[in-house]
Image (cartoon, rainbow, N blue to C red; front, top):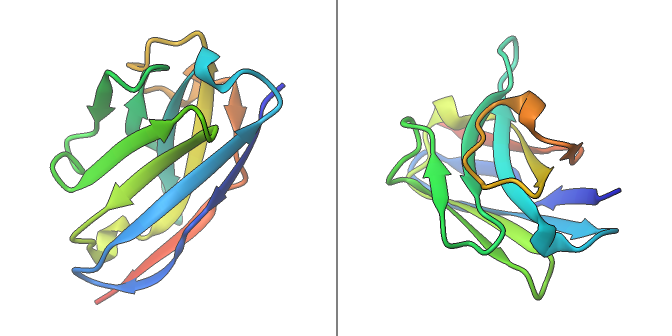
Length: 125
């Protein structure tokens, strides 16, 4: 079992930046590929970015490529999502997720084994 706790969300003006963190506990963090998803009101949960267990490989949705950066620190059992040049359409609840022994390339929500409770990101225009 892995417990995931997100933090770093909040209210930011368009054009601003936020860094989300997801702290993991319970099992060996480096055994897991990690990902960020988001869910806006009335919409399906969608893939944002993912990272392999070592951090060597990262993957992004087309909508955030070049704007968001996923990274991890296995010594701190933490995965990050740096979000720059935010827009109102980025407003959503952001969730981190873990996939046991995953390669880091999975984009489906059902590929992931564990989820955090989410953190709200609101971008004002």
